[in-house]
Image 1 (cartoon, one colour):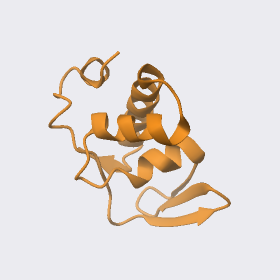
Image 2 (cartoon, rainbow, N blue to C red; image 1 turned 135 degrees about the vertical axis):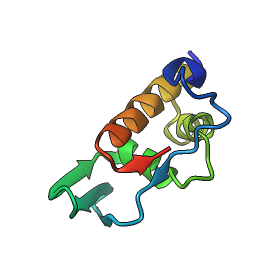
Image 3 (cartoon, rainbow, N blue to C red; image 1 turned 30 degrees about the horizontal axis):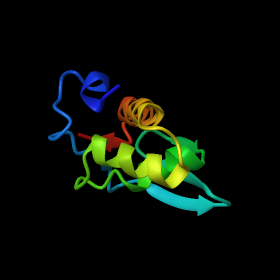
Image 4 (cartoon, rainbow, N blue to C red; image 1 turned 90 degrees about the vertical axis):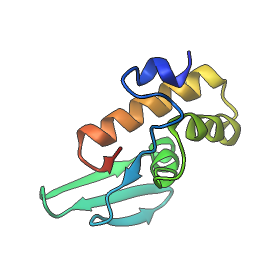
Length: 99
């Protein structure tokens, strides 16, 4: 699987997810806790989602994040692409990142 399959509407080279700057973020025991004051919600990300979240900086493409994830967690490229795509889609759905 390639990232373009995960995000068919956006070419992998132009999808640069970026964290919203108005969120309060804390790191607690390897996990990320995000406070969204506008929506009055708290989100807790596991270690994998936290790793992806940190790389949603508006400078890295989803494909680049997936490659980094594969190396950092020693998983195959297909699993990394699938996991990265799923996490990015969920973060977008929750309104925590913008593309």
